[in-house]
Image (cartoon, rainbow, N blue to C red):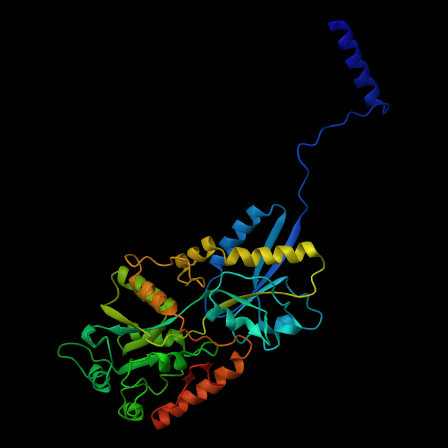
Length: 379
């Protein structure tokens, strides 16, 4: 019997070598079809795409065969003649003003707070959904302005902060406020209720004339404003979470000084990262993948992971920062979590930002003007 089996096997091998019989090799598993999903990021405030890259890796593991390609882009690339648009675009307010020419309306409910979701609505339809946000707080040098002044920074306090202290190098200015063309730092300052007496006192012009405020205190770059604060040139800085984290790291390295923060009593933010799906997808499978990517970014795990990158979740059911580990960011998150949060409409923001900058200049000259209403930003 064994000899017969060996003879049969030898015969099959001999016939296979001559093309008479072909042995069929069993397939272990079918190869997944490769598909590229192109994601463009157009923003100027998060500072890094590390969170997105991390979530992209999670997404690829959950979708074998999908290659998620994330790249930074400029707003003008979206409408460049002959340009191949991405499948998904992540963008900041002001990047586009006519979303219906590029993005597809989003269907279905996502677990994003409604007071944030309104930022992505256009003519009654949802074209973008916020997936991350930032905020503002006042960073104050404790040696110049005591923590006991945490409630209200009166004009007298600001003037005192600019005076030389015995045995110490004097601060040249009391307050710095940065502007970079994309965010509305000056408007944020106006929204920090109680930061100055009455929000924006009649004496602001006098403070400018007294030299307490630098001439460019609503026009200097974020880097210069931060540098002036760290070097002791100003006593208080209207900061984003990026400057606050950077300063805390400096203190941790033994190179900073004692400081405290004051968060806004009337919270606002224009630091939003929205996600939209480009219209005209070639097939339903690609459109489904795009929707799955948006679902991934707004999922509870991805939202909690934002805290590792100094960002804030856009869901109301995510714990976010631990008050024992990140006290300042936790306090900022608590303020941003309120239903009274003001956010700009992403597709009107370019025009609104210019108007608000003009109002800020007017406030400096005449002691204050109304900047926001109960309905939101004033165009």
